[in-house]
Structures are given as C-alpha cells and as structure tokens.
Length: 322
Image 1 (cartoon, rainbow, N blue to C red):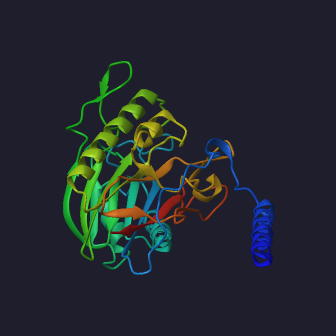
Image 2 (image 1 turned 120 degrees about the vertical axis):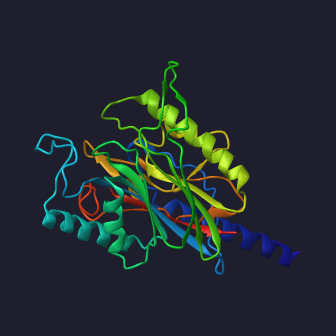
Image 3 (image 1 turned 180 degrees about the vertical axis):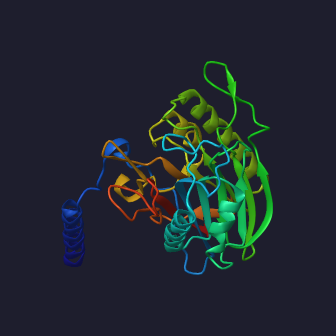
C-alpha cells in the first residue's frame, strides 16, 4: 500500500513539473497573415534515409547584355546590363545559391536559356541540369530549374492548359508551368516551378485559376508516380490564407512545407514593412517522399528582405526519400 502511494505521489510530482516547464516556454512568434500555425504533417528525419534539399528563389528580373526589345531605357521593362553589370549579378546570385546547398533550385525571373546556362556554369558542373520554361515572348522573365543528378524528362503545361476564372472567362498560366523529372543518386524526383500572375496587375481570378489547375496537375502526376518525390515550388504571389493557396492545400491537397513554423522562419518578401510568405514549396502526397519537420527556412542576406541582389529571399526545405 505504501509503495502504491509513493508511486502515485511520484506521478503527481512529474506531471506538475512538466506542466510548469511548458508554462515557461515562449509562444511561437507570429506576424501578419501567418499568425496561426498549421498542424505538423511531416516526418522526423531518419538517420539513414536519403534526403533531397529543394529551394525556390525569385532572382528578380535577370536580363543579359542584349536589348532584345529595342526598349531598354530607365522606365522600360527590359534592362540591358553592361558586361560588368551582368558578371556582377552572376557573382552575387551564384554565391547566394551556393549558400543554399540545395540539390534542386527552382528559379523565377530568368530572361533566357543562355542566362540560366551562364549561372549554371558558375558551379563547375555541380548543377548539370539547366532547364528553362521559355514562353517565347521578347524580354520575358521565365522560370527555370538548376539541379544535381540526371535529367529524365521535361514538360511545359502553359500551352495545353485551359484555365477558367471564377467569372467564367478563360486564361492560361502567366508563365510556363514547368515540370522537370530527375534522377538524383537513384531517387526519382519530379519538380514543378511556377510564377503565378503578380498582384501588381491584380488579376486575382487568374491567380486562383492557376492554383486550381496546378493542383489538378500535381494530383494527377502524383497518382501516376507514387514512387517519386513530387514538389511544386515558386513565387505564387499570394499568402497562406489566400483563396489560391487554399485551392492548392485544402481537402487533402498539397502540403505547404513550413506551415508548422512561424512566419519569421519562412517569410520571403516584405511589403509595406510587413513580412509575407509568397514564395512556397508544396509537397504532393506519394509514397516516394516526405517533408522533414522543421527543415523549412527562408534565407536572406539583407534587411528587410532579399538575397543575392533580389527583393525576394529564398525558401529551402529538406525531403526524405522513402
């Protein structure tokens, strides 16, 4: 009887201690639209499991030394860089990307394939895959992928997709919705890089239509490739509480990595001095891979935000292969 009472007393003491310790913990920081953290649905890192690190980064209007539009004045869209200016940007961006130490880098706002190849060349073969989603417009800034491993296949969906806005009008992806299939050390990885229409326009109906079609495509690709890691990343130009992001993530949809972390950990942009998460990495549900809990992080090298001369920071996360 005495032993039983001692056991009960020890349990009570241990419970009270744990409650007291929990009460002393600082609450997670929060700001702006991401104040409420979402449930943790990733996995703890397994010591022996293969891991793939993926980053998304809007490099901001990376043009070359040629003026393709014949309009490259101070107030024109296209910027014509000098040789020194171009090399300067290459140095800054390559240094920033090198610091990310990612196996796959999803890029936005690259003018053309030669610009992406010049960036890849800075890594001396570390990123043998260099793929651009070129839409063919003069002085367009497009999406691209730099990756380790071997290119298996690539596909663009912009010309074949019919997107419908809420008002019934039809449109298409603002930029290429680029799919790149990779073999990285024997692991199957399928990535999509996207840049949804900007809020500067603001065509919110088009952005919602882009999100709905992106979700449909990733659901379909994941169902057909259950043994692969399937990830969408890019500048989606909207915050986690928006209707387009809900279209991507609600009802058993894509997992927004870093949803279990504070905005301060994963913000990529600052608007009116408010931190915003508008660059995202989203994981499709397959048996091929899982998000490693707590691995998402935004990377900046200047205040209030920015990396490598861009006004965006990068978002990086680690995924475990199964």
